Amino acid sequence: MKAGIVSNAELCIPLLQLLHHNRIASFVFANIEDPQQFIPVAHVCQSTGIPVQEGKAPADLFAWLDKVQPDVVFVMGYRHLINTRALPVHLRDRIFNIHFGPLPAFKGPNPIFWQLKKGTPTITVTIHRMNEKFDDGPVVWAREIPKQPHFNYGFAQSICSQTVLEGIVYLLQQLQQQKPVPVVPSVAGKGAYHKRPVLKDVLIDWENMPAREIIDLINACNPWNKGAITFFNGGEVKLMDAIIVQPPQPASSSASGTIVADGAQLLVMCCDKQVININMLSAYNFFIPGYQSREWGFTAGKKFGK
Image 1 (tube, one colour):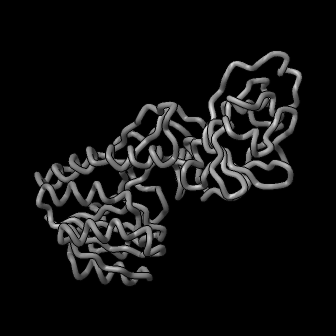
Image 2 (cartoon, helix red, strand yellow):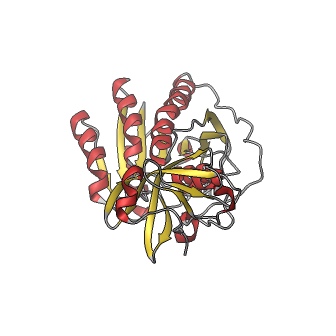
C-alpha cells in the first residue's frame, strides 16, 4: 500500500512516523507557505526517506497524484479546495481529510481555536471523505477528547495529532483487508462554518465577557497569539495565563477590568463579579509574571480596557 500525505503542517509528523514504523510507503505533497515552519516536517521526511513534492497550484497536486499513484490519501492542514470529481476513480472514496473539530458544527480552517473559545466540554478529531466542498464529506471516524483545564491551543493540537492515529490505523486496516469503510453519525449540532480568527475574535470584552469566557479565550490564543489581547494605559497587552479565584472583599463593587489587588497576585474583576488571577502577561516586549506586575505599573485601581 502507498499512502499520500497532503499537508503543510508540523502536525502531520506523528502520522508520517506511524506510516514509516508500519513500513507503509509514504509520499508528501506540500504547498509550503512558511519554509521555517516546514523545517521539522522536512527533517522527518529526510531521516525516514519519505519523498516530498512542493507545489503551489492545484494542478501541481494532480500531477503529483498521477505520478505517485497512491492507494489512499490523507489531507491535513491544506488550505486549498480539492476538486474530488477530477480525481482518479479509485481515489474518489479514498481521499480523507483530517479535521480537528466536530462536523458539521465546527467547519472551517481553525476549529480548535473556536472549540476552546466557545468552551466546549470536549475537543473532537474527525476523519471524513472529501467531496467538492470544504469539511463537508461523510464522516468515517470521530473521537471526542474530554477537555482538561490545562488544554490550550498548542496542547490541544498536539493531543489531536496523536489521537487521530487511532483512526488512521482503523482506516488502513479496513482498506488493506478490502473491507468497506462505513459512514458514522455526525456529531450533534447544526452545520456552521467558522472563519480564521481576526482581531475582534481575540480581544477581551471586559464589559460583556464573564470570567470563564476570558479564561477560555486566553487558552484559545496560547501560544500562537501569545495570549488574548486587551489594552492598558493606551498600549496593547496580552494575557497569557489566568485562573478564576475567590474575590477579595470589598472588590465586588469594582468595575469590570479593574485591578483589585497587586503584589503576590494580579487580580482583575470581571463583569460577572468573579475575579481572575493573571499569572502571566506580555507587555512592553516582555513576558511579565503576575507577581512582578506591580513593578511594571499594573497596580490596584487601574483598569484594563480600550
